[in-house]
Length: 311
Image (cartoon, rainbow, N blue to C red; front, side):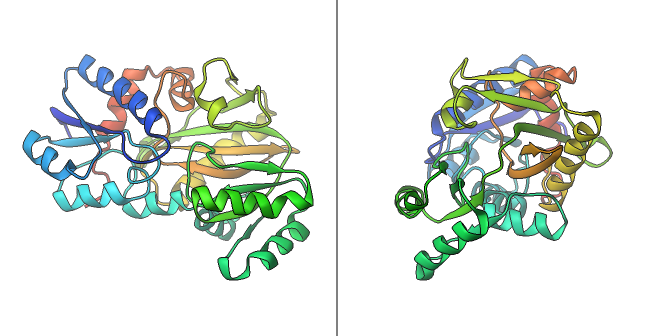
């Protein structure tokens, strides 16, 4: 594994998850400094290439969620600059950020995922009608490329679907319809590479709201964590196995977080995050802690895999 001394932690960026990125980045920086690394904190702006060159860093820890940081753009820039970086590469990052491509690949590999309907601009009304007939009500309206459950709405009435599609499309861009699955919300962290790749303990989520949305994710006290999740042993093991498979199918690297809903003991994958939150109330650190991995150990292990399969 590579050994680095001077590391840049990149945070911020233009996405709606900017504030969470600062929280993740600050905690990551503190963990690395506690382990003796020389840390340079750099905000993601158009001056990033110049700033990285000036600072003469050896590696980059990406703490940018959403646009630019989680969609392959930052990864591509760092590869051009020849800098090792944490997390997944360009292809995996881009694929994971697009929920439609994720579903197509997962379906091909027989990974359970909620049914869906693409919405195209040229056939908007037809696609909405088709989605209602195929998926039933209630259904979920989601942005195709957005994180932290931003823009996600559960629609219960037929006459509310088109307005929701138009509203979310206007604010977040391309949208799609997804089957609503009533069940237990769980998430599984993935950590490691090669022989060290493993699933962390399964975390069940009990949000105070209808589902685990942005507010529930990042407001202390809004969601109860149950870890290990209270699932039948067979379902628990299946959740971990499916999470690893979903991670591998998208060619992800070193760490990710796979979000699922369990219905009738079957876990359905609906999202995969290649740069999951690393704040004091985030899921992945809680899962690592349940596995006996301290926060500082988690961050150092993620850094140790920088540059895996990138060049």
